[in-house]
Length: 143
Image 1 (cartoon, rainbow, N blue to C red):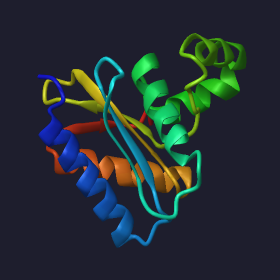
Image 2 (image 1 turned 180 degrees about the vertical axis):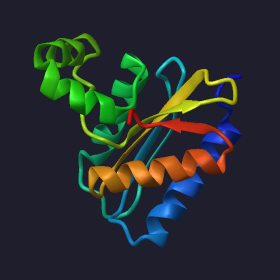
Image 3 (image 1 turned 90 degrees about the vertical axis):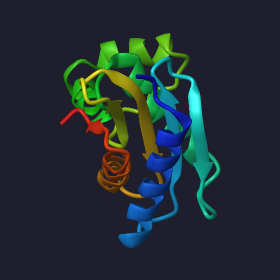
């Protein structure tokens, strides 16, 4: 099943709700479908200028490489030349830190990804995972 707009809206609302409940810094959130096309993109008031681009880079890295950005962060330390080449291959849009999470359906198929940026990378990931769970889908951060 593809990622529906309704599911993406649920993920977005729950991600923001989790962030506000934990008093996180303002967030930028980008949700991509299984092709890497933008489904939703928002920046809360108070985010810095390029925060949305960073969120998109986390989501794009995850969907492009098929692993959550936490795994991509590990790959950066283990195989820096591969990550540099992969970043180039996807047009520079790869941010190798936690906060990019694959969205999986009940059958474990990848149906999209979310990138969150604005707080610590760990908090960005926590907010993303809460959003995905609220839509009754599975988050895969690459742990």
